[in-house]
Image 1 (tube, rainbow, N blue to C red):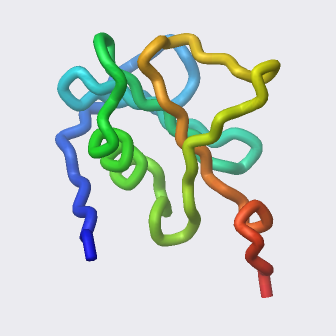
Image 2 (cartoon, rainbow, N blue to C red; image 1 turned 180 degrees about the horizontal axis):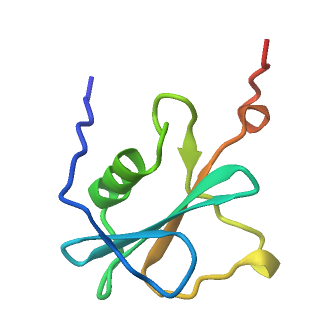
Length: 104
């Protein structure tokens, strides 16, 4: 079994857009809570972020990620697709109903 142990040296920065913004080397991340659910944007200026960079940002920066809820990278309908940065991935907190779980 693979055990993920993310912990990067994130530095919080000021940014003109809403959310909590962080950098780790050249990797940038923004954490927001939209309609009560977490959303993470992870980007790099010259390439796509690696899988290790994406999961490290998710588990390091989003409170409760990995222990209280799951997250996913979604591919939206073409009509809903918006990405302001060419090398950015978005991780969204999944609702239990989306996973077929029942709250008992």
